[in-house]
Length: 292
Image (cartoon, rainbow, N blue to C red; front, top):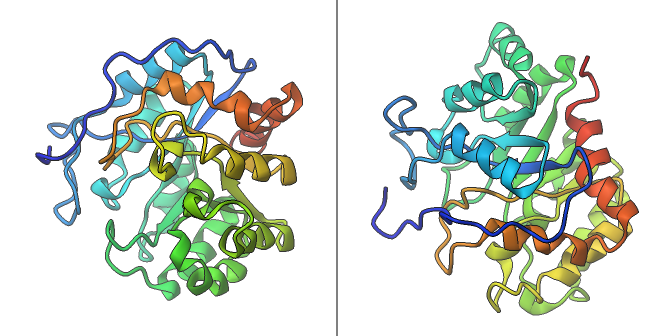
């Protein structure tokens, strides 16, 4: 792995907060192992191995029942590690793939059978090269017959630029990590209020209230991030998801304890009803509605 890459926490605490039965970690990754699933030659970073066995052990340790595994940029459009993990999960995981616009219907059908239910478009410039909107729209046309949705990753400074594309996506759209707001500005700043307004105007747009470790300016207490996630959970209780983001790729400030991240949940979803929506009802409706 890269010399400045931080490996995931080796011994996360057992959280005191107990997720409701059937809870879903709706944003996590698998990396390699590289000897079996090599990383993309075009990757912008090289992580440590973080395979399905470690992920599933963490799921059980934290008290979750299921995972949504998101293809990360270091594997590019080679989804083999993702598909292997989905197959091994025994229907306890669903996937978000990264594909190119040339993908065929047969390959998409095979991914669907394995448990993929969405594609991801990454617009974070330090992680990927330029993403063509035309390619994105071609991909959306191909996944519509499967009932898949789109996961979009961008940073707050790019929201205005990307809004026209978001409004053209005729699927459910899930925005990663609250659109990565600058939490130093506060929830009342026009930037975050524009993000809230976007969700208010478009019923098909969801968001993940995840990754306080990426957004905080104060460190592992994450007090500066909690108001942002809390505002979204309260305003859009039926369109929010939560995930660990394990194994936390490209963290530079600190490597979070995943047990401590779970302890943040009751601070952002302050009632049992909101926790049920966030951790069970919403991800099950989005990813497992066709199960059985």
